[in-house]
Length: 61
Image (cartoon, rainbow, N blue to C red; front, side):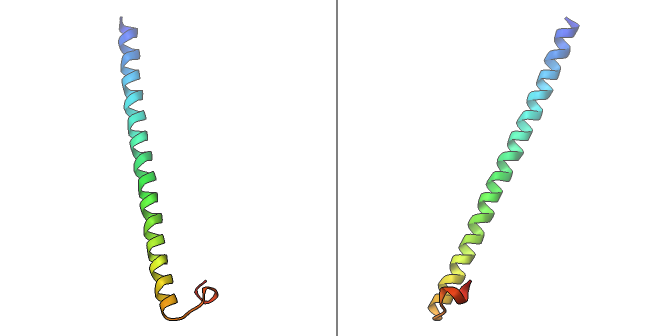
């Protein structure tokens, strides 16, 4: 019975650790997606401004 309690406790710790790792991974993934979208929005704004001023694609890049 003591061994059973020990393994149940280890199992709970493992699942807690796994849950924290999954939560952190999800948060990192979402933050990367938001960062990419932010960069794309800024780039799109810059390109629209440059095209409105008459620059060519080669000058922009």
